[in-house]
Amino acid sequence: NLVAAHAWSLRSADEGEAALRLAHALRPYWFNRGRPALGMQFTLEALERTGPARRDLLRCKALYSAGDLAFAQGDFHAAREHMGASLELAQALGEARWAAGVRQMLGMACLGDGDAAAADELLVEGLRLARGLGDKRELAAACNALAQLRRMNGRVGDAEQLYRES
Image (cartoon, rainbow, N blue to C red):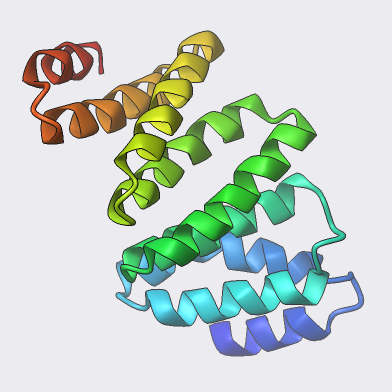
């Protein structure tokens, strides 16, 4: 049924909106079912259907989903590419909360890709933004992400403080 719904969404007359909605909504399903490759295929097809001219939060979320699914498959380069596009779009749209969250995954993708300096920069900025949002969940996630990096870099004291804040 999901394959049929995806095929229908790609043919719908709504300029790909249904395809983007479905792609992002199914992201947790692909993880829970151990099918990130199929989810990635669906998400990329939805993004292709709408094209880069579409610049809204729905496309931003689908780009995030593509990055997350690429990350799950160990394709950190693709994860960085999709997450970077999601971050750029979130910033252009003024979506501060979304931009803060994307920085966390993008930072982890940078780390997976061997770029610890970029990861650190993204995670520090993500934490700064999360503190300004007043969203406890976002703050906890940002603290935890940066704490992981600090712990991996041997900065255990800094990590402990961030874990406590989380």
